[in-house]
Length: 481
Ligand code: DUC
Ligand code: ZN
Ligand code: ZN
Image (cartoon, rainbow, N blue to C red; front, side, top):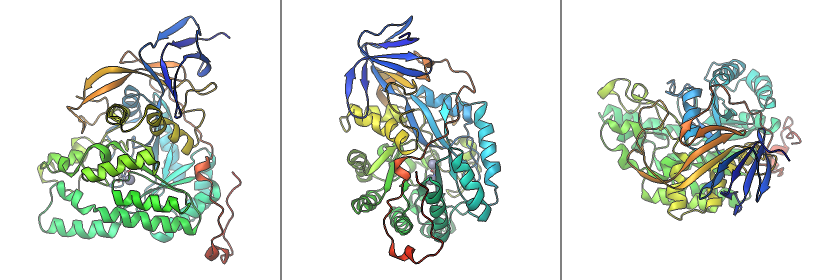
């Protein structure tokens, strides 16, 4: 077999095991795994870990937020930042707002990404305008084009859906084969509290954390699980932050429901104290907000026991302009929500998870790559080192120690500044091409490809009989996936 490239002598990891092998690459794919492979080009990986490139299934890139603010990153800066951190696939959002035509939204995002992305990308949709044409025509067409997931919001004035609309979207997603991702927070609780706080003059960033209560998350998760159960629709709750929220997912799963959970670095590593530093706390504000040490432990446990299925960045990059648009007089209601995390997602989990012995290396691979690819219809093309898979590989130096300063996104800050991380992806390949070589970028702008995704097992409805639904004439059976 004529191999183009061999990664020699490293320790490989999959979601199941670690083992010593060379990786043979032919063109864009992995062609062989084994001992003693040779080729004209060889990368010496002795003493290194050879891991699947990360798949980040939750990030916001060149996107207008629910509050109408544009991210600081475009598809170039975000994907460059991802590549430096060992991530080789991203799935950001195409965000429909209230009056938007989904077809135009989708075309715009394709255009934005096509000429800029340096790694491969899929898309999720955000559905904020579930009117007749969207649900009957535009959404099915988008799903058919390989966009097999969509996000809905239970809060934010500009994007939230009513329970009736949520059921409509779930029914359409079930019928046409898309996974429904949910931002689960009770809108009434947050806006009731926030209105009163601002009137009282409590406008500092710390009040953002206070208004997004733990109970608001738990209630919304419980409610959306009940809605999903009624229409037999698998759901994935994104950015889960609380022990009670995780418990609600655990209970739903124990009843056999297809309810998946996701958490992010900010819920494992930050707390409300990070926001409680005056106006600069804005740079640590995200929704839901980081909580306390107990909640962090609950998130670690949830990742370990599988209640939390994936670990994503929720990279929502905003610089000073987005965070403090009115300078020191910005209220917490006017700050853009979100923190950057695309680049540090993997190194943080490696240090605080694998290094701290909270998780094993195969669990790390599963949580950062394999599960994402499986859940979102990219497996086995992405998320695994196996013969036939794309050669998306991060070579890690477990001895490399880095004190975090600045990352390569355009926010100008990172919430993890000053932390010492042990273990770093030094060389990164995407479809067989070196895109980061010994810590230096080697990727051409626009080389990333759009990934049309397949329906995954995760989105297949249970097929349970729901007695109430049997009475409904127009209730549709799901597509045969
Ligand atoms: N939800 C997200 O998923 N990201 C940023 C802000 C938000 O509300
Ligand atoms: Zn969200
Ligand atoms: Zn997000």
